[in-house]
Amino acid sequence: IRTQVAIIGGGPSGLLLSQLLNRAGIDTVVLERATRDHVLQRIRAGVLESGTVELLREAGVAARLDVEGIAHDGFLLSDDDHLIRIDIHALTGRQVTVYGQTEVTRDLYEAQEAQGTTILHEVSDVVIGDLDQDRSVVDFTHQGLRKRLDCAYVAGCDGFHGVSRRTIPEDRRHAFERVYPFGWLGILAQMPPIADELVYANSQHGFALASMRNDNLVRCYVQVPQADRVEDWSDDRFWAEFLRRIPSQLARTLAPHPSVEKSIAPLRSFVSEPLRWGNLFLVGDSAHIVPPTGAKGLNLAASDVFYLHQALIAALQGRGMAGIDDYSERALARIWKAMRFSWQMTTMLHRFEGEDAFAARMRRATLDHLAQSETARRDLAENYVGLPY
Ligand code: FAD
Ligand code: DHB
Image (cartoon, rainbow, N blue to C red; front, side, top):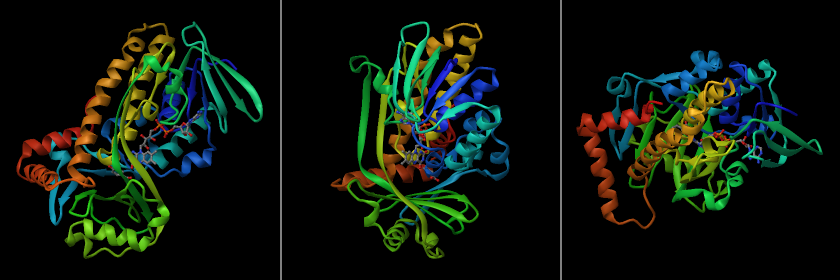
């Protein structure tokens, strides 16, 4: 099979890149390891930066998002019973949009099918080669047959466990990493939102987050020890823990409902540099992971796609290689700022096992400063709503 850009991974990064390239008249083939249903069932991110929304509009996949997405002017932080509102709109003039990653992915699949793009599912044993040649190759197994894609460029959109990053020789890439000693246990439940806006709660019992998907679907999380398993957490245990971590004025009116989904995600900060190796470009989770506290994972994948789609379109239309040459540096500059923000939000809101009393006082002082200083709130809002591309 011949194509211009081979895309490894049919998650949000791969599909959005493919969609933007197709709309510019560039041919792509997407190789995805899982089934379409499997990709669509993963419950993940829920908050879109305004830049991500604009990029989805540019890709022509925002019709449903523009109707069903919920624009939020702000969010809440809490310190035990004390609530602090971050008025994103007043501080930055922008908003964030609550719209699940599941929905973004569904919209992208539908648009790609309408474009007639080749998306091969249940592909295995992907091997990427000839990255230093004029044309590169991607070998893979599909429906029991070994096949070959011949292409000009390869986009590695295959997530943290994919093959793309590992195709770069080990002595030519550098990893930067922090693993946090806890995970997030998340549930989805059919009930009205706990508050009008998201609540990021710091408490003496640990972190909790009250989020939502729509008027009758909530997504709630609690920080749990790294070794905990989903089986350890009945719905009753989840709600009891959640209720004691959010402010009592919110807990008082909350009527717990059974979960319809429950999963645990580990927390990690990770960056692999560089993002380019010959004709191969890493995008999204294949190159970097943030802890979810800043709601940056999906949004960072989108900004990588923004830089790379411009670079690939210019190169393939004969308008120069500057974007290709700058991709890694441009994307990393934004990635590191989101890394810093996500780390800062995580440190400000989580209890670290074995920590001393000093750490808890630092969290309280940081939150108290945010409550008092508009300058501090503006800095937080500017990062949360998303730094410019
Ligand atoms: P992915 O979504 O990981 O997509 C990669 C795709 O590549 C997958 O479909 C995978 O099946 C495929 N693939 C992998 N290996 C191969 C291979 N060898 N060959 C072919 N295909 C392959 N972010 C938030 O902001 N908030 C959250 O609450 C949140 N929760 C998360 C929970 C979990 C469990 C995880 C893993 C991530 C979470 N994230 C969250 C992060 C966010 O979901 C990711 O940043 C986002 O999915 C990145 O998109 P991606 O397309 O780069 O990678
Ligand atoms: C959600 C997840 C996040 O990581 C976050 O910071 C905000 C919301 C969510 O799943 O709704």
